[in-house]
Image (cartoon, rainbow, N blue to C red; front, side, top):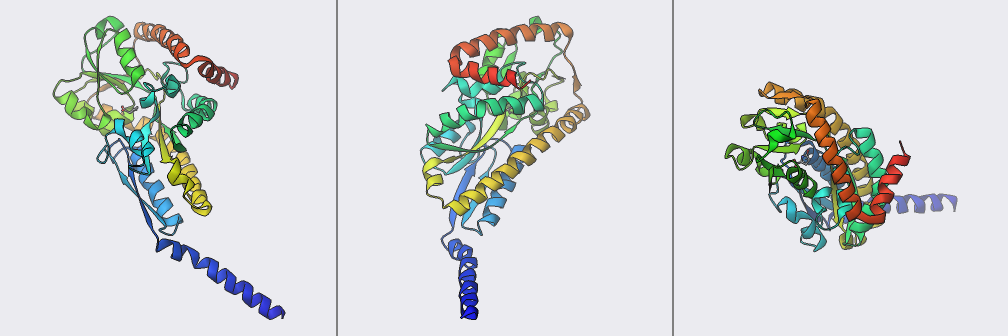
Length: 329
Ligand code: PCA
């Protein structure tokens, strides 16, 4: 009798072990649009996340990444996921600041300027952001910060007065506002398009990370990078909530595990990439270094203005995020 029970248990185990193979025969294919170039570390981390899910679910869910805005342009990715045109994708979180100021919590100049502070700020903001996304039929999977944001210019700049009338590439509301407050002329351009924009003189400056300047080889057109460490914006990966609810629990757990791994490796790579890319900009012929004291002072004053504007727009919930962040210092 005992033997029979063991045998039955073993048979049950074998049957369970055969389940992934069964699931694989009903394989789902998830296309994952991403806005940034394949060579960017966010895109590479996304590609590894996709592989992790495909392998981990035994092929039951097969994710294919589409970097460089090749499937949907950056600005259209969130809507495509919300409406179920694609199940999953990656986008710059602060790109949605025009919908709700809260999305811009990570682009407030000089609030969180290091990786450590950026992680604290994310911890403070995450519950609000997850709720905002959930209300839009989106489930947050993971988020990774870009390296600190500095200023790129074609010509040398030592003060805000030197920026007057310069054509500036913006990537969200905060960057466009920064341009306005410094007398520059903002034009919104996706990172995938900036090499072209700088080469043709559509823009002669931007605020971004060393990573993006390096990936887009901006030394072909621009000459100066000032390390002002203004903020560290985040990219995030989201999944359509209906798709998520229809995913069985075992596969949800695997996806969550892969997402945690992606967040960890992505954050590590962002840090590692910072010094490497600044050296790369130098090797490309750019002058890389801190901004003048005068410029830093003027930018900090503009940062104060932008902080109060954000607080006004983001209301009590925005204030609670900043207070929680300050409480972690
Ligand atoms: N690169 C992205 C956003 C922030 C960054 O460092 C970009 O320039 O679009």
